[in-house]
Image 1 (cartoon, rainbow, N blue to C red):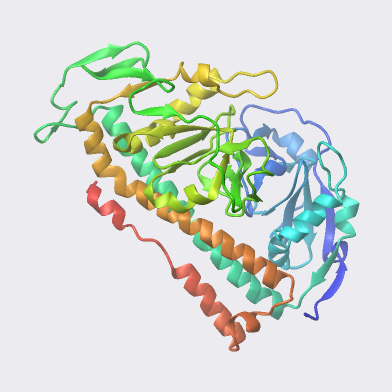
Image 2: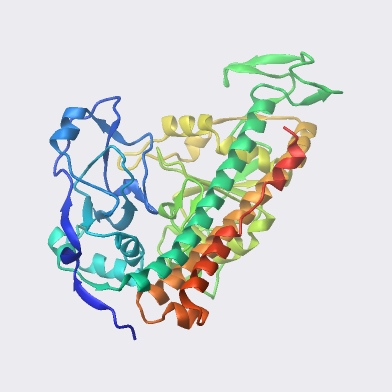
Length: 448
């Protein structure tokens, strides 16, 4: 057992407070963003197109001092999302508490609050039957460990190195997706796909016709179908194969854009909730049906482990895609045009989402077989790379969770895990994790 001292969280902070209790007057354009608990993700304050703005007067009026020793934590609705403050121009809502630590031990507590046991405890001491709320008093009185710097800093170095590797992988995935979108747009929007010798279709002034549905010219002979009825994919119906061992359940909340939560909860076939009823299959693409919810995934041969061990929520719509068209359809679903059309068509009294009838209203351009085959041959390596990196991130997430439980509890020391040599060896292990980086060789074949 460790010899860590314990104290009330408030004694480690100069102040613990929360944001505005109320709704400010929003403005259309501003440098000052109004953030809530759902803006906190994996150590960062996430600003997106749905984040509201306030003017400078409101920002100054509700100013809260935050600094590099601050830790932000969500306390209303979703409990326990944590992030550091990085000099963003933000105004906090009531669903965020700020912990202004008196030292950089906030690095330790960033990981402390990620432990499953601590998250469960915070949830248990929260009030509210429908929407949970963690009171400031409960946070202030929380009994927490206080390790010495030479105890907590090596632990943070290990965990920060894993996070850095995951961040690098996320960058690689984003870069690969952007590169794929660029090729897709060049070929199927600008019509610069291989056509006649060294010339592209557009350069050779290939025959086109105007498509009113898409509001642009398309090659003569290409068809326009719908997402629900087309020759490249078909909608996957709800339903699961019976399984005996437990599987992990990927809810829509466990996918942020294309980033997977590696620690989805386990379920049994008999004990699963009704929404856990979608079967991932080979050569499938999935997207969130909800309006203004950009969540997207695909599975091919590199995702066999995921296909065998996961169940998806009915909040996802799935497409069973012909192998030759997988990369093409990935880009169709991952496009801004698709999201705009999906959001426009989504309907519902309580939660707006797209249904089967709505999928009949989303047009899909169907290229000729030769062009699909060429696009597949050029981009398949790129998307296999994305799958392999995603798999690595999932494994790194599991490793991080295991280390969290062992190290942050103080029940196991760095020396016990990695042997003597202690601090220097710890930093060496951290460096090794950080240096295990993916390379860019997959891009070489494109010669762009």
